[in-house]
Image (cartoon, rainbow, N blue to C red):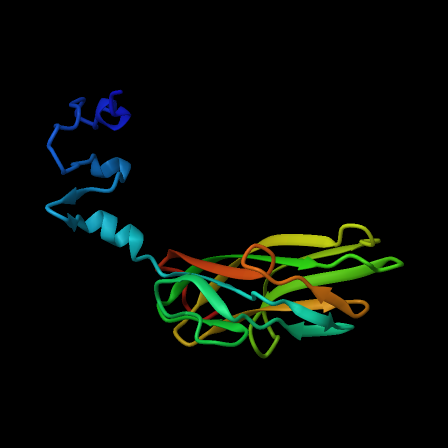
Length: 193
């Protein structure tokens, strides 16, 4: 079976040369390139982008009613030491970050219930994205995933701030309760007034 990678032309119309144990790539397409066991600069830059995905593996029993930060207890990846324990991500490399989070509430409520989740700083003075739902989650619970944008300076923090109208269990696990941030641009990290 032929390797489909070799059939992709680069911008000059030439196919990549065959070489045992090495792969050269068209850098404009950002295919990773490894020569002699060393990654090229473009691949290193892509792999080294500041990003983190922190999660809470155990969840929180009886969250609410009301607002509270949800703590995290592990990371799936963290290329810039942004999660330093606790509920917050801390900016180490300034810039504009894309945020994404997920929260799953267990079922079992006998009546309508509201949930609200936000990305906020520890002082709860800025919101970088939010989602809300209201309904009867008795059978299946409620799963929310939402995005946000965070213009961050070194030392700025953001956390997952969750509201429930009545005491609800938040389901733990790396797929159910997590927050992630990825640097999108090194510009845009200026102080926002």
